[in-house]
Structures are given as C-alpha cells and as structure tokens.
Length: 283
Image (cartoon, rainbow, N blue to C red; front, side):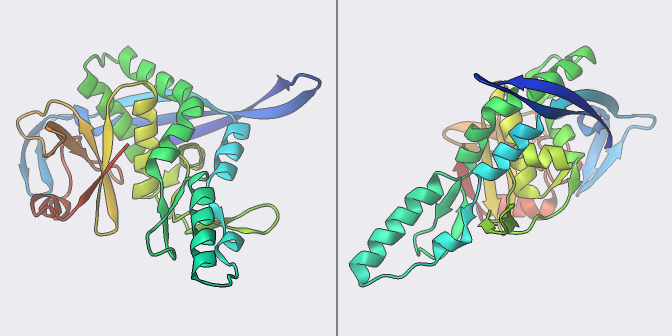
C-alpha cells in the first residue's frame, strides 16, 4: 500500500477554552484482489486469466490524533493491577472478581484460571464505533465512485484495504507516558492499527470488523484457531466460497493478514475449519 501524510492544524473549541490539535490526513492507495479474474484454484495458487488486473483504489482519510490517543489509553490493563496481596481464599476470590470487573472496562477479559488475560473483541469494536465511522464512509464512497455496488463488492474493498496494511506482530504490552507497563494481550485498537499502518491477525481483523460494522455493511464473527484468527462475514456465498455454518446462516471466510480474496483462506487454515478445530467469537 502507498501512503502519504499531511498535517492539518485545527482548533477544537471546549466549553471554556480552545485547545490546538493536529489532524493527520493520510492517502491510502491499494489494489483490490477481488477484482481480478480467477479461472481456477490449484491449492493456494490462483490461476488468473491472462491480462486480468486488479482495481486500484485511493482514499484520503482524516485521522484525529486525539481520538487515536484516547483509543490507545482506554485499552489495556496496568500490570500493577495484577499483583496484590490477600489474607485468605475468600479475600483472593474477592480481589480477583474486582480485577475481572476493572479489566473488562478496559477491553481485557480475565480467564477462568485468574492468571491469564485475553482481548474482549466485542468491546474493542464497539468502543471504536464513533471514531471509525467517518473513515469507513470515506472508503465506501471511494469504492462506489469506482463502480462498486453490491454488498459483496464493498466488503471486498474493505477487506483488501485492511489486507494491504503491513503484517507485523505487536508486543503483548505497551508502556505509557509514566513508564507504566500496560498489558494488551498483543492486540491494538483499530485506530492505532490504521494510524501506524500495520498489525497482526488480531489487530487487522479488529480494524476490518470495526469498519464494516460501523456502517452496518455486514455482520462479522471471528474464527479462532491455533493462535491465529480470521473473520467470517454473514453473506450469501458464491459457488466456490469457503464458508462455515453458524446460527443457521452461511458465513464466508476472510483472511485479513495478507492478500486473499474474500471467501478464500490458506489451505492449512481451511483444514482446521473442516476438522472443526476452531471456536467462534460473536461480535
């Protein structure tokens, strides 16, 4: 993906005073893999019609750094919270319950054993809804200007947008301005992923889900297996789509880490789906 950045200085007016902020306008240019003509698949290799090309899309989005900062600061559990003393088993259970509740307010789920944490994907997506909606509308408008009309075509535009971001694995924590370690379970908020231009399977899938759900384009679930995650979208499948059946409906599979057309995932992941070695996370 090609990106260019400009800084726009603006004024945010509060009730009693004004504060200056910088708005970052970024141009994203990417190719939609769903628009090439595939004759057939041979395993993970697509045999493409000679001369077939991919549609290029270009979109300018404005990213408010204040929103990015707020998104980042709202997510994650201070490591200091996870260390405490207790007098007996009842006191331990009480403090674990309190930690579980506090963590849930910051997008982190405490697992049953009380010693491990995971990302509350649903919390992350709903927390991001307000700040991501305008960006999603701009991407949708960009695709429509290029002739995208069907829901499937638009979903493909969003998927290819997210796929074109660099794949990079974030650490399992961040350090805030006070030098405090904040546990994030290795995920990032959608606005952080977008502003940095990279993410891993969790973070890129969260960005995709936040974008399409913020404009009610599609219902999304996550398919989790073997320390990997990809998305499922509730959509009437084409003949060759790879799908799962969930809640009595077909959900087409979407791999967001790299350039894969919607309805197609790598063979090693598909084997896990066929063998039912996965769990579904509803959003």
